[in-house]
Length: 362
Ligand SMILES: C[S@@+](CC[C@H](N)C(=O)[O-])C[C@H]1O[C@@H](n2cnc3c(N)ncnc32)[C@H](O)[C@@H]1O
Image 1 (tube, rainbow, N blue to C red):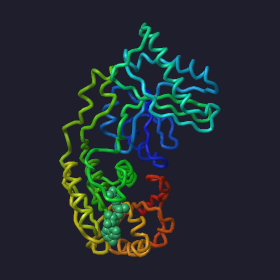
Image 2 (image 1 turned 90 degrees about the vertical axis):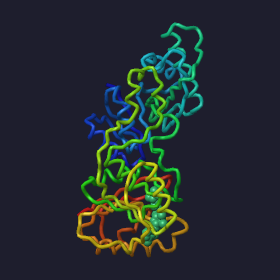
Image 3 (image 1 turned 180 degrees about the horizontal axis):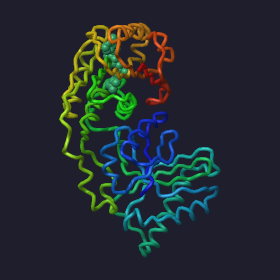
Image 4 (image 1 turned 135 degrees about the vertical axis):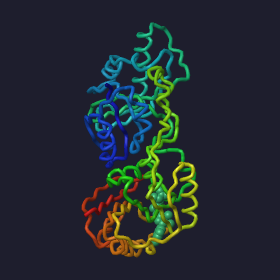
């Protein structure tokens, strides 16, 4: 077993926690954008291919209290680096994040850690000099309240949010991991209808379809090249077995341009969903249980008529009496405009903007 750290959008930890539990792993801790859990090392490829709501998966190498540089050097040296890093592996300090700690100079912390790792590796592999090869081992360091967490990033360049299908964007495209988080937290399943009435580039309907079918697009992870995964190379290729799904997923937008972008993205993702130019106010009424999951319009251009649009959304309550609604918007008065109190709501940061996630399900 290793301790893994799932990095996610701060405030949305419930979504990766849901995925981690669904795969039967044990959660150790969950705080501000990090969910720590235990899993077998050989499951890392499966986790990278299957989890939809995490930006990165880190392997924790060590955790210790530290208040001075000598101690930092010694405690990093005491970790079993040979278990993780092969001979001539190239250590790259990818991130150092320090909060409320005595050691505060990120540059100095990074260089001491790198020096200490190389000294230990030279000793373990019995070599005088460390000639780096091109196999990169990115290290993330978090120092909070004098507690240092040292971890290896299995992904490195590009986050897991970048699935590869979203070649084109609209100005307010939603991060793919946030779209997947909204869908998971709505508890939607593929037997039900899902509608995004403001779908823009199609992120939410596409993520719903990928989730329902279990489909993953192949992408590169830095750890595929690591010695410790050399016998698991095949596992980094997503399973070809996919569920045949009769999708009941619909995306609408008033913009013709947005719909044509969404169609291109859906084609790249290989999902066959219904995308159509239509204004929200003209959706055909239905008594079905329908999940409305959407990232509502907001932003500079639409600011003036946003209150008007939100008030018009009362139409959805009348036209879909059995609808369940899951919306994100920065608007704190949305419930007043919509004319209904949310069953649950919480805030998180979406690309630097605080947004509310409103859930209306009863
Ligand atoms: C925040 S964007 C959605 C972005 C989307 N989640 C994505 O990832 O690309 C909101 C979208 O709502 C659309 N919109 C605004 N008012 C609308 C209306 N009354 N009916 C349908 N679409 C509308 C805009 O054209 C815009 O594409």
